[in-house]
Length: 190
Length: 172
Image (cartoon, rainbow over all chains, first blue to last red; front, top):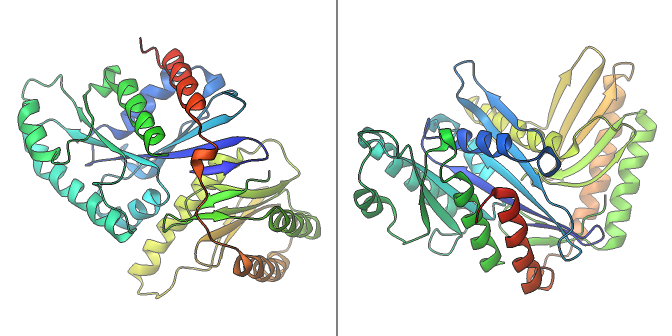
């Protein structure tokens, strides 16, 4: 969180975390495509030539004066690939909340678990812990015929009983609900 | 721009006095003027711009700072790969018309300078080095304390924000 008292501006950082190719960037692309240009900045995307996120994606949401204060939300994605571990660490620094985007395909469950463990490890390194930090889970790709049952995914990933949402980020289902829910959590914790 | 609080990497909120901010902006303006640079930004490693001085309107400061922080993250990874114990001290991008020089200011902050190709790189390095020393002195004086966000984020703000978000997000 970053407060500019002279300009009455408050900035929040939300990081979309999750395994590679899970739909983090797709969430931001959908948000960008749906919002009026007056409330969003440009989508800054650093991709490799095969469309994988290289460093991060970044999108700023900027709302007008609310009770004389101007809220800004900075949305970041982390690179899903493991070898960008240090980049993930840097992007996570100073985050106010995390959206964990899990892939619903059975074959990706190990990646989901490994990435969640990695998130927890990085939290601890920053002297924080997932049981006290605001975060939500988004179960993405719910439209796939082989997607795992929600009960099974909940049992494996949501051991802290955090808010969760089902989503199909490609067509926008659940994308704004997830964002709204994580912002609510930030406000509760602020 | 004169923000007053930023959160450091360890989660503590950094509180800058107004005098410190004015001093930082003065230092950035002085560097910009001496280099005839177009933009100088002082930011934290999280990607938040803390203060800047500019002579151009066509640069998105927020995106620029986020990208600079990302670039530092990537080069820190490269430093590790080549067994450097510390991060690289500066990063330089040379364009056809404009160049960008970025450097560490202590371990948690960075400075970004955008300048014309006519400015000599040696001059940039010398003057920037002096500026970093001045900024580090200010950071040494920085009082660290937890600010109470609740004073800023009152109940009314939170409730109105929810309604505003629902309007834009199309949630009923």
